[in-house]
Length: 313
Image 1 (cartoon, rainbow, N blue to C red):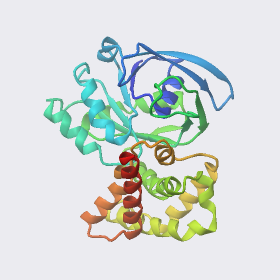
Image 2: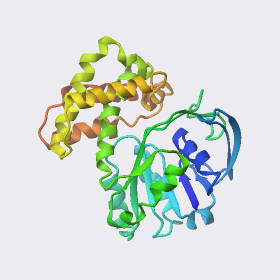
Image 3: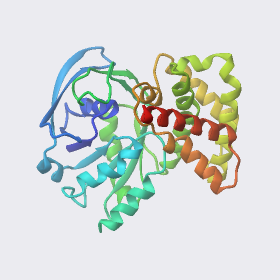
C-alpha cells in the first residue's frame, strides 16, 4: 500500500518504522524536509537500525491508499487542513490520538470542504514508544526512537464511508500486532480515556513514572477518578463500574511501570498537553449529563495552570 503518516512524533514514527518494510511509506510534517532518518530500536527482537523514510511529497500524498494522522488532539484540525488540497476524496483517513472529542470537528470540516463521503476512521493504541531526550526544539528525526511496550490497538469507522475499510485493521495488525476492528470504536476510545484520565494527569503533576502510582497515597484519588469516569460512561451508554475501571488502571500501571505518560513528558518539556481532550472531554460530557466530577475537574484545572505557567515563562 501507499501510506502517508501525518505527524512524526514517537507514535507516528513507531507506526512508520513498522509499516515501512512492507509498504510505500512517507511522512507529512510541519517542516519541509524531504526525508526523515530514524534510529529505531525495536522491542522484539531487540535490535537497532537506521531507517530513512521519504517525507512531504504532495504527489505521494495524492496517491495514498491510506492516511494515518498521529498528531496531538489539538493539532488534528490543522493537520487535516494541510492535507486536504492533495487528498483524494476516496482515501481513508485514520486518526489516532490520546483523548476524545475531535471526531465531530473532523466530520464537520469535511462537510464544509464538500467531502461528506471521505472515509474517516479512528484508532486507539496501547503501543508505547519513547524518544530519549526529545524536546520541542529538536527536529522530528534527530533523536533515537525506542519501542518500549506492546499493547492492543483498535480501529473503527466514525462515518458510513469508513465502514467499508475494515481491511485496514489487518494492515495495522501485520505492522504492530495486535490490532483489531471494532464495530463501535467509541467503546475502546472510552476505555482508553478512562485509563488516561487516571494516569496522565497524576503522572504529569507529580512528574513520576506510571509505576509510582501504585503507591498507597494514590489509591483514594484513583478510586475517585474511576467512580466519576464510570458515572459519565454509564450516562453516555457505555456501561461499566468504578471497580472494573480501577482494576484496568492498576493493570496498566503494573504493565507500564517504567514508562512516562505522554502528558508527563509534555509538562516536562514545557509543551501543550492533551488535557482538554482527556479530562476536559470527560468534564464536558459530565456537564452535559448534569453530573458532578469534582476530582477530575480539579485535575483538569491543575494541568491547565501548569500549562499557563509554562506559557508565561
